[in-house]
Amino acid sequence: MNHQFLQSGTTARGTLAGIVVEALVVLAAGIAAALIANLVSPRGLELSRNYFPGAGAAPPISNGAPGRPATNSAPFSPAEYLAARMREQGLQLVDESRAAQWFQDSKSQSGGIVFVDARDESHYRGGHIPGAYEFDPYYPEKYFPTALPPCQAAETVVVYCNGGDCDDSQSAALLLRDVGIANQKLFIYGGGMPDWIAHGLPVETGSRNSGNLHPETK
Amino acid sequence: MEMAAVLARWLLGATFLYLGLDKALHPADFLKLIRQYDLPQNPWMLNPIAALLPWFEFFCGLLLLAGIAVRGTALVLIALLVPFTVVVFRRALAIQSAQAIAFCAVKFDCGCGAGEEFVCHKLLENLVLLALSIWLVAGRGQKLCLHHTLRSSSRAKT
Image (cartoon, rainbow over all chains, first blue to last red; front, side, top):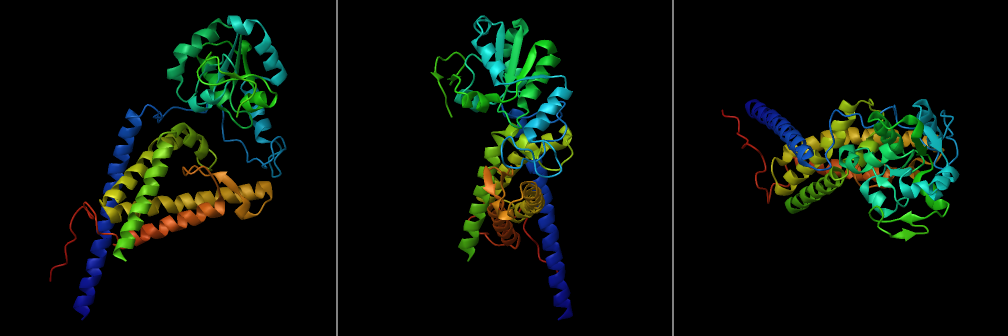
C-alpha cells in the first residue's frame, strides 16, 4: 500500500511538472506570437519609444468632480497638474477665448494659423475643430507628411486633445517641437474639444474640410 | 459535468479572445490606461505590456477555444489573473481614498478591455475567471479538444 501511495504521489508530481512545462511552452509561444502580431499590426507600438516625453508619472487621481482639486494629498486637480507640467516643459497654454479668437481670424483660412488635433482617428472623425489637422502622437510617422508642412508654414500652431487630464496634446506639441517647429509659435489649448463644444463653437465631423459642420456635436 | 467544463473552457477562451482583441486593436489607449498603475514609468516596462499582453491574451483565448494545451494555458491565465486582480484592487482603494466614496461605488476603466466598470463587479468577474481556470487546470473540459495536452501523460512504471 505504501508503494501505491508513493507511486500516486510520483504521478501527481509528474502531472504537475507536466502542466508547468506546458504552461512555459504556452508562455514562450504566446510571447513569440504577440511579438509577431505587434510587428505586423498597423496599430502596433514600438517597444522602446517613449510615448510620454516629459510627462513623468500619470496625473494624480481625480476626486471625480471636474475642475475641483483632489481631496487627498495632491493639491491640484489632474488638469491643473497637467498644466503645471506643460509649463515646466516651456509649452504655452491658451484658453477657449484665445483659441476661438484665432479660429475666427482670417489667418486661420490662409494657413497663418493652424489647429492640430492630437486625438486618435475615431475621436477626430467624431468631431474636430474645422480645418484642424489630425496628428495622433502615438503614430507620428503616419501624420507628419500631412501635418508638418502646414505647421512649418504657419505663424501660430494650436494643439489640442480631450482636455482635462489628457496629455496627448503635450506629447504632440513636444514631437512637433523636436522636428523643428519653433516653441514661440506652439500653443496648447488646454480645454480641448470638450471645452470647445461646451462653448457652442463649430465642429466638423469626418475628414478635414469635409464640410460637415455642426454647431455642436457629441 | 464534463460538458459544463467544456462550456466553461469555451467561455473562458471567448472572454480572453474578445478582451485581448479589443485591446490589441487599440494599444495606445491601453498604454494610457496602464500608466495609472504604480509601474515604473519606463518605456521598456510599459510598452511591452501594452503591445504584447493583448495579443498574448488573444492567443490564450484561441488555445482554450480550440482545446490545445488546456491545463498549461489555464495555469498561465491564473498567473495573469492573480496580479491583475491585486493591482485593480489596489487602484480601487486609492480611488476610494481620493474620492471618499464607498469601495463598491468606485468605477474606473482598469484597462481590462471592458471599459469603465464598478470595481466590485470587476473583482467578482475576475474571481469567476480564476475559478474557471483552476477547474481547467484540475483536468476538466477534456472533451472536444484538438490536443488537450501537448504530450501524453505517462504513468509511472513499476
